[in-house]
Amino acid sequence: MEVTLSLFIISFFLILSSFLNVVAIRIPKGESISFPPSHCVKCSHRLRPLDLIPIASYVLLKGKCRYCKSPISIIYPLGEILTTSLLLFTYFQTGLSKELYVALPLVALLCTITISDLLYQIIPNKVNLFFFLYFSLLHFYYAPLPYTDYLLGILAGGGLLLLIALVSRGGMGGGDIKLMAVVGMAIGWKLTLLSFFIASLIGGIVGFILLVTKKVKRKDPIPFGPFLALGTLIAYFWGVELIQAYLFFILGY
Image 1 (cartoon, rainbow, N blue to C red):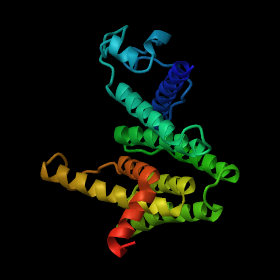
Image 2: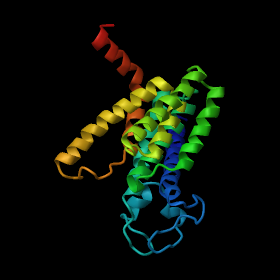
Image 3: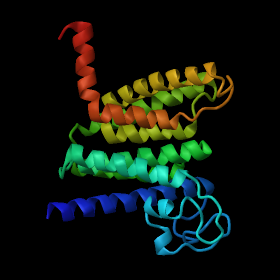
Image 4: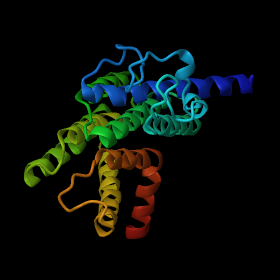
């Protein structure tokens, strides 16, 4: 029974990760996620079920289209591996509890915007809006925090980044602003502020390394969405412990 359940969960997350990949790749380009059906971007040949098995098809086809032999972007299997791994980790962290209603969609959102931001430097409005509505409605059913904490989270996340964008005159993208408003609605204002702090810290370090190694130039845009996603994941899963450790280190309690 346990083996069957494990196989079902893994299969479900693989399929879900494949779907989220499609969302991340198609939505920023203004394409439908259902039409046209999955096809090779080079020869436009419609893909068959055996071509669409998450991760496995890429390996079996040796990273090439079955029909025209053109290389398949490594983004597809990497996105599926990353997303599936994080979804599985999330499931094992929360178990079959109500918190899964928050955790899985949150991870799905963060994985989706990470792929789209890395590929196109775009965090789609449609993706942000869908998850914002989801979390807004969810917290009428399941809300570990007072609803006002989530409303303040919108201000703490979206408002803070909007202020930075205004002060820096464009130093923060609109997609990033809306994303953090969604994160605020999902996890409340305290963890949202921590998410931004962690994202800024990691982003600053990575940006400095890229500049020093001359991988990017000073005025080259660097997608901030993946750092916001990473900061949110860290804050969501370990934020309480990090805050407690900080208070103990600074205040001694």
